[in-house]
Length: 144
Image (cartoon, rainbow, N blue to C red; front, side, top):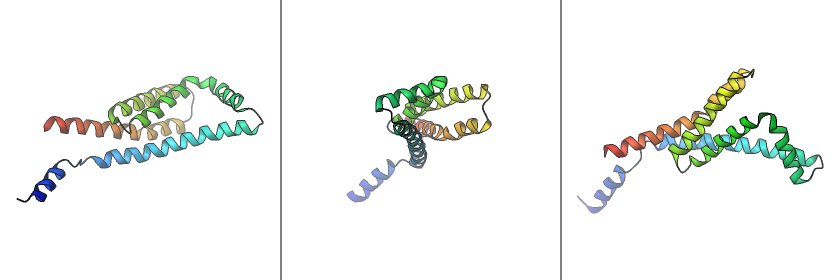
């Protein structure tokens, strides 16, 4: 066996067969993060267009979110979890999934419409994919 063939076999043994799960989760998470950032920036710019100073616009945005402060904090944790999951799939996926599940429980117990609840369940897909990828990698490394 030649050296190049040996190198090829060693490299192919280390190829991650679960890379598709991680990349699907990353693409979906990137789209979710971009949409959330777009909405937040749009609301902030709308407050600025009313002639308010940047700090007053930020304060006004926070004040308008106060009635649903707990939901906003959960959403922020979920988005930060998705960002962390780019590097630490298990940790970020668990943070994000727990935040989305608590948000789902919180909003389903109130008198919200089914669209919000369905949206939260759909948005939770990358969290589950990150956790599946992390779990597969953990069991794969234990089997070697």
